[in-house]
Length: 353
Picture (cartoon, rainbow, N blue to C red):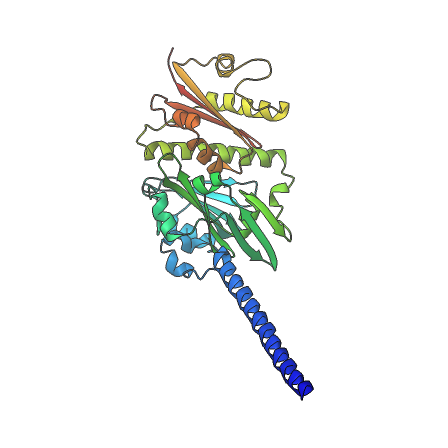
């Protein structure tokens, strides 16, 4: 009898333990599922965003992947066609009403767009819009993840990136770089770009599983490099005047002699592997201007290195206090820009004796 009682108790205890173990296993699985769902919500590429057609109302977005012939029909011939080192050709429209636009054309279709200017607008983005207002529409993430050709890529944005040029993912092949004036916390320009071109530019730190485009590794000829550099010089000049107009400053005139001075300094920095306003022999801007027999009342110089292209370097200068002061100095009347490979020089001048 005692044995039977013991057997019944043992069976009851075993059943209770089985139920407890099974319940805990279910709870762990449920918790794991919730964590995956929470992680999915945090991952920018998997958020349930609005469709691009609803989110992006501005006409400019509709030109992505459209034929260059249709673009010409709508906008007319560009004022210039500038070769880029990334394989596409910039079509420059700098005479639009209050807007400055560059369309990047590759294989006869639009693959990237840069827009700035007083009246630059491509809803829901427009120049002078506050950072906080844009952040209410789009999420600015430290990590922007996407898939392409079954490979995974993640851009890692620093705090400086998030402040000056956050990256918005619309889908796995459409992104927007938002260029901010960090001093005023307002938008000054946007760049719409495909995944391929973004991976060529590499504007942010990147981890990836897969391959990268290598259009920027092309062995350009000396003449091709000259064309690329000349295009960037003209773009930097145009963009500088666009931002000067934006801040109600007088427009600058292009100066061939200043261009020569600026180009010689960029080339010298590249070839002698230094980065400074003062050359290894001690010559600074005043000595360089004297060498070219240029008279002036006042002069200023901006230099930069290792930026991706003209839109990127001009944004960098605008968000650096000293460079910004020179760029927006209303006393200057002339500008020369010199680009050699990945070195950039601007020489500003107020002419006189």
